[in-house]
Amino acid sequence: MTLRIRTFEEYEAVYQESVENPEAFWAAQADTFFWRKKWSKVLEWDFRKPDIKWFLGGKMNITENCLDRHLKTRGDQVAILWEPNDPGEAAKTFTYRELHAEVCRMAHVLKKHGIQKGDRICFYMPMIPELAIGLLACARIGAIHSVVFAGFSAHALADRINDATCKMVICADGNYRGNKSIPVKEVVDIALQNTPSIESVLVAQRTGQEVHWQSGRDFWLHEEMKTASESCEAEEMDSEDMLFILYTSGSTGKPKGVVHSCGGYMVYTAYSFKNVFQYDEGDVYWCTADIGWITGHSYIVYGPLLAGATTVMFEGVPTYPDAGRFWEICEKHQVNQFYTAPTAIRALQAQGDRHVTPHDLSKLKVLGTVGEPINTEAWEWYHRLVGKNKLPIVDTWWQTETGGIMISPLAGITWLKPTYATLPLPGIQPCLVNADGVELTENNVEGLLCIKFPWPSILRTTYGDHERCRLTYFSHFEDMYFTGDGARRDENGLYRIIGRVDDVINVSGHRMGTAEVENAINEHPQVVESAVVGFPHKIKGQGIYAFVICTEAPADDEAFRKEVRQVVTEEIGPIAKPDKIQIVSGLPKTRSGKIMRRILRKIADGTADSLGDVSTLLDPAVVEEIRAGVL
Ligand code: PRX
Image (cartoon, rainbow, N blue to C red; front, top):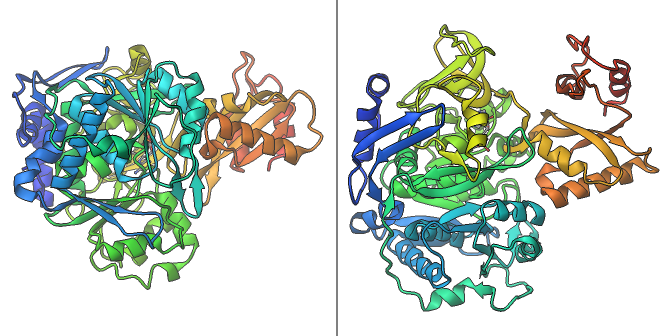
């Protein structure tokens, strides 16, 4: 079985070992899985290229480790426990045996539609079991999944389909979210007007709503599944074969497809899941993320299933039918480990304690957070009200690119400190550097967070553009992976993540490139130029503040703002809508034409009293004008 650290002393010893002899450490972790053929070399790496390979020559299939391996020992244990949007609808369970059968059937459906090893399949789906089954079905036959969060617009979906030249889309007719029903298939239909690589669409039936049908292209998944066989030999994959692509935002306009490979991702997600959450046999674990993001990939689907866990998958939202829904589900399914985002905690905290207190949360053992820095008030509320002042909170820092949790307490084993992600997992070697790339070796410092040594689930490339991967992560500092985050290390060596130091903002735990939002705003015919920055937001963590220059002053400012929000919704999706839109006559620029975002950030967060050095500004008067009109 995968290593499970149980004491602080053990953590310290294992950490030391993992740094002194990383290859032996990771080989021991990898040894606990089923490999069709064992690797011949543990690691080969060169961060300068970057070229990173783990478990070279190893042959395996991740689904044999998620499913087949468990059939003898826990075939009748629940693997996925699905809770629907509407509490009146019955929850659904899939035992490991049932899940195995469903995955095999779906794998046959994919094959029947001409899908082969290496083909890309795009998922645009609600949180229904078919999504998890679909990912595993791809992995079973060696197809590469690319999940697009179902809140993205048709335009954003088409871009991602085209970037990965996907052959198939898997979607649903509609999506229940709270008291809304969202027309998923309709969005796909619009996207597919501009996606030449798509040959077929599989549609899961969820809402039963009317959908447009293109015969020869569209197929009902449940119809196709009816005749499919329940057994399907898994494709033999090389450890370094691609497992999936997941698009994420960066400093530049275009989202990039982060690529993860089979062997390393398998080893790391299982290892980190077990250790961070201290999952015990028979526990019920629930991560509230959407599978459209990395958290859902690694800690709803792959990590828990690799570890033989019971993983809860929730279709709905935290506030439907009321703000007690999370706690109602924890009580109903006797959840032991609960993992959510600070933004959800803040939103629920704002609704008051009365939604939490009536529920029996006595089965909870571990609480977790992910995706953004957690503020002290939210941490304390979570600890006091949900954790009854005794449960450990694992504040897990990681990224789409890291594949798994990198810095986090191990629940109940290592130290906790509110708002601190604390210590690296064994095998992870973080460091802080200054702007010149000099490592800050002492404690009680702040710097740029980098990782000095590869770990098995590090991204291998960005799909179709390896140079972009090199430039973004490996070119800033020699021989280091640069995370894009700033962090503090306290006197005891504990890390606190401060936030992004690049042009990425984090809105409700969703990563957004400011350039991406600006490009969308600029699509409005009346917009000449725009600049987007984040500003502190009580619930979302960061809100989106847009400064916009128009061709001429709008007749009605509010109507104009509404139109801009509509354009952004169409270009990216509602999650990227600016909270504030200030119409300005100019932007603070340097003499070379670069927008000084530092100044805009200070104006947006109300700290413009100390603007620092503005001597390079082309037109200082514009700053005064913007400051006077701040929203
Ligand atoms: O800025 C960090 C923040 O989220 C970024 C990664 O976003 P994404 O790739 O979408 O993955 C989110 C889920 C893993 C990071 O660069 N972030 C993530 N976790 C934390 C965090 N910031 C502070 N504390 C965390 N625990």
